[in-house]
Image 1 (cartoon, rainbow, N blue to C red):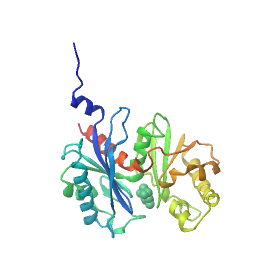
Image 2 (cartoon, rainbow, N blue to C red):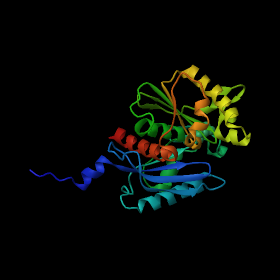
Image 3 (cartoon, rainbow, N blue to C red):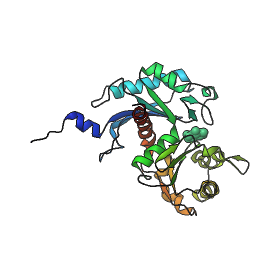
Image 4 (cartoon, rainbow, N blue to C red):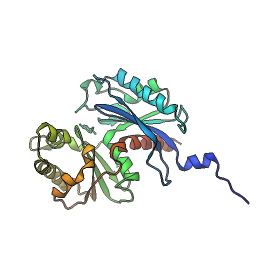
Length: 274
Ligand code: BGC
């Protein structure tokens, strides 16, 4: 008997979901191949970026999300225009509601992001914290793939984001950048932005990271640290300067981790709902 691989079978190996990463300066979206095939966790085609509207209030951000979605929907291999879509956002997100605003406009606090975005996009939307999205993506397709025990993904950017993944399961909203350290919030001294703002050398910055990671290591005893955010592109400048008992490695998905993780969250929530 001859067997034929149908288009449906091919696409179920790589179900495609839209993921969008809402950042302070840019909003980036892409068509993400999920599933467990060799290309899983990568984007189909280029990502599409639009600068984040300033001031970044709910209405213009939702309209920009709609513009990004329209561009992606029009592409070959896009999922159905009614398919769930994932968005990651730089705040605590609980049940779709924004609960913090360390580095975004305080007016977001209390906003039901899920409801607001679904109204604009007219399809199911899953909204998750940006570091949680990066953590999901790294655990499934990146540096944490196949690692058991406790993996902490720490993103160093404008703030410090954290994702706690235990045996592949995400414990959401791990606000590790908000830990108080030396009398201030850790992210005010040890984020990538703090390094730029204070014009720190890599050696000086590594001292701040040492203090931060040692503290987190002592409190959580992880099995692996994965460092994400923009500066995960240049790990040789600071990772060799850190002395920890926990292995520490750069993230692998780099700039696309948020997009991939947002898509994963949307896809997994659909599976959960079945
Ligand atoms: C926020 C986190 C976010 C991180 C990275 C922090 O200021 O509190 O929720 O994950 O920045 O964007």
